[in-house]
Length: 155
Image 1: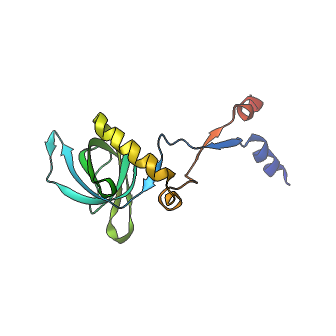
Image 2: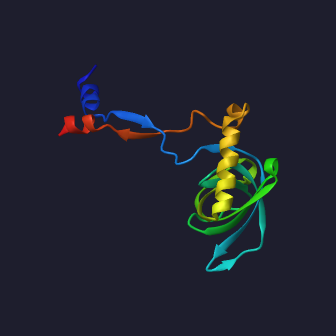
Image 3: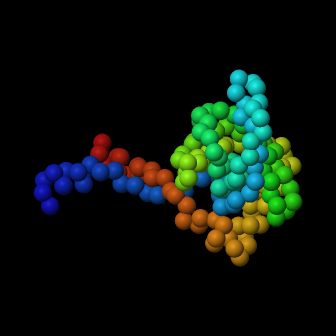
């Protein structure tokens, strides 16, 4: 090991991986309807498919790119339980998807209590089911946090 490698190793932060998600996320391709709210005015109703759903938000496959930060009114159709969930959300991320489409991540900012309970129950029951290995990513992406011990050694 040369001197530069030793130097880099000495000052490289030590990481501990942990999952920072607030809720489990289920892979699902359901129909969604949404309206973008821009300047207090709602757009026409648009349709999309969901890519995944959690109790705190949804990722949609859409044919347009809408700027993060915009608000949307959503209706998520959950055919397995024959329910529709309504919510307001904020677009948090937009990424390229195959075939010229986009993935639009929406974080719920308002959802009524009844719909939240229905969604939570739906996701929990699916998570416990046999097909959960196909529906949920049990090895979800983790964030890395610097361990205090590594920071204290540098000081």
